[in-house]
Length: 131
Image (cartoon, rainbow, N blue to C red; front, side, top):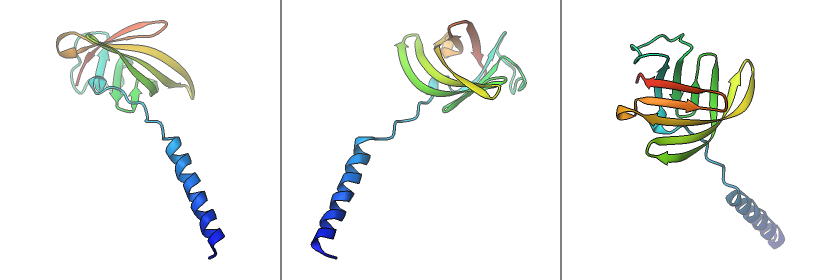
């Protein structure tokens, strides 16, 4: 291989390395560890394993929120308060084969953060931690 080929190959490699270093992959949004678990709305603390078909049961996982007939993918999570613990969460809500982007406020209160209040543009929902 001649000198020109080596210089050209080295230059292309350098450009690729700089381009990949300049654009790091964005870190995927995740639900805060404090919110991870099973939550039940409308009533007292749930009896485990609880009603898996309840329309007020919410399962929050690090990368997904599962609700009765829908699920959310977190897009951005910003903690807005440490006392009480609260986050502004933008997510993609998948329902009936379509999706929309929603903004919600998640706030933990009560003894040992066992109460979760979720506020969006049209509703306020309150849940208790099952596990």
